[in-house]
Length: 75
Length: 193
Image 1 (tube, each protein chain N blue to C red):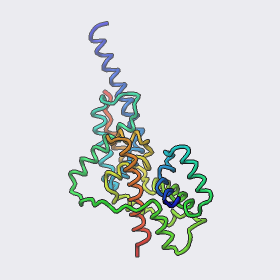
Image 2 (image 1 turned 45 degrees about the vertical axis):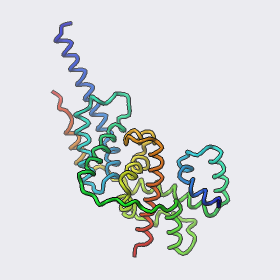
Image 3 (image 1 turned 60 degrees about the vertical axis):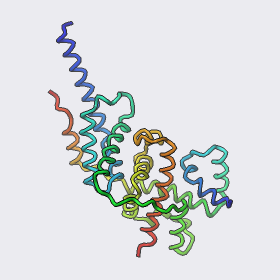
Image 4 (image 1 turned 90 degrees about the horizontal axis):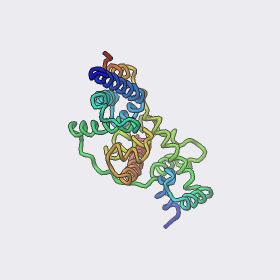
């Protein structure tokens, strides 16, 4: 198997840090010298941050007030 | 001590615990809303879902074990309500998307640029609308995991507990969800006229 196919397969567990230490190191070594894989791994990392930001919407203050009103009234 | 005193103290203690629970739950509402917004397609739906979650949480506060993860407990209510809601709403049948590899989106972006994409922030080629739109079509089982882990910052363990699925399923769904999201992004960002 082409080593880069293998990298594509393990990119997610690599970035999630769920590979074995040995495997993690071997991918790191590969990335240092592979112009195909390294920008793709960087992109994946950036994309995760971007998805988080793009999908984060602030809670409307009106909802906050509605939730506070659900509290049990103190007697 | 008279029986009335003991009863009075019990009531006072319970009232104090309940106030503490409600304050703590309200303090997490921003995070709960963020997850809700990722799970559904409109802000209105997210608001309804969060409101129902807090109504139910405040009603059944006694079933929460103090000292355990309140954020996960609230999200478990929310995801269950969302599953019920999805069953009621007649949705278009979810087709199983074809699965491309993890490099697919990058390869497409590079192809469409006609040159290597090094030395720039490639994600800037994607708009916020592209991302929100792509997430909205990820099948629900996958989307739930992706939103909890990648947007809500829950661990695999917490996500497994919230969704009541094994941790291995969380991981496999998460990996598929990210691939499906990238495929949808490729369609939006690259193949748009």
